[in-house]
Amino acid sequence: MTRKDGDMGGNGRASEGEAERGGNAFHRESFRRRSRYALVFAVLLAAFFVITVLNINTGNVHISVPEIFKILFLGTGDETQYSIIWKIRLPRILMAAILGGALSLSGFLLQTFFENPIAGPFVLGISSGAKMVVALTMIYFMGRFHAVSSYTLIAAAFIGSLVSIGFILLFSRRIRHMATLLVAGIMIGYICSAVTDFVVTFAEDSDIVNLHGWSLGSFSGMSWSNVAVSAAVVGMTVLFTFLLSKPIGAYQLGEAYAQSMGVNIRAFRVTLILLSSILSACVTAFAGPISFVGIAVPFLVKRCLNTAKPLVVIPGTFLGGAVFCMLCDLIARMAFAPTELNISTVTSIFGAPVVIFMMLRRQKGR
Image (cartoon, rainbow, N blue to C red; front, side):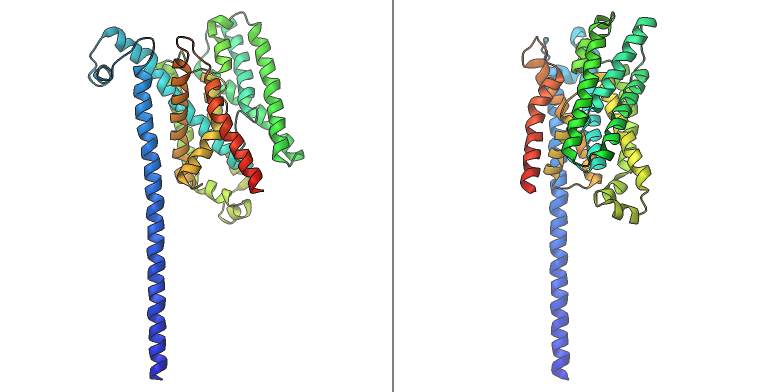
């Protein structure tokens, strides 16, 4: 009896030891995850700061870093440089950050909806649909009223996005294979782009509204009113998306699990489409179509964070998209200065190889 009790005591102590070791391993793993998250966000924030300074610093008029800080924080300095920073470069930088983050987050939501990392607003033709309706709206309003508001353009882009998504969803009922669905999206994009090119070519006011440059994608010509409108629309949409982190996380584990957690699947899927459409519409309304950002950035952010947890991925994706588009805009401005490249040209150079790598990786996984 004594030996049994002793054995039980030994087994009890062994179980306690195993539990303690398991608890320590869990805490170490949790600490490693938090450290990785902190490192990734620190690198992104540092890159954001450095690229912002470089964007302000470089151009036809070179402005030194001390002069930049003097103008930004003290409000003093050369009057010409002051105007260049506050009226031209800073609005453009902020718009690249806001719209880049919005486009990346739009891609993340579409990938969640279709359960496929290759889904994105540009590849599925959503950006092209938005571009077509915005071009038609610009031509109509400029021809009759000689002006068009930012909110009107966002509404037009939103309608165009919904039309394209409607066709994609219609095809998705008949086409189960994602690769075929992507081809259908690309065809929709080509049709919308062809219509846009046609109306832009024969528009009388195309030079006034700079439709040709806008239709190819550009952050040039941004103003503080554009920044205010885009920040308001994108900010509210991002906040609402962040509040959906828990349902998105449940949905990533399967519809059955999400339903068991109390998620209304139909309403949730409609919400994902609406949020993604608002974000991509805002980008297209101001900067035109921008390629590959919505696919490449969410993938890279998830790889760096080593998690798909929405609570972490959503802010990481937005910040990553901001840094990516700011960097691409800097390259577009300076690579062949004074000639400026279209932003989609640069994003394609960096984004397309990432998409190819993703496809090869998925094929190898199969």
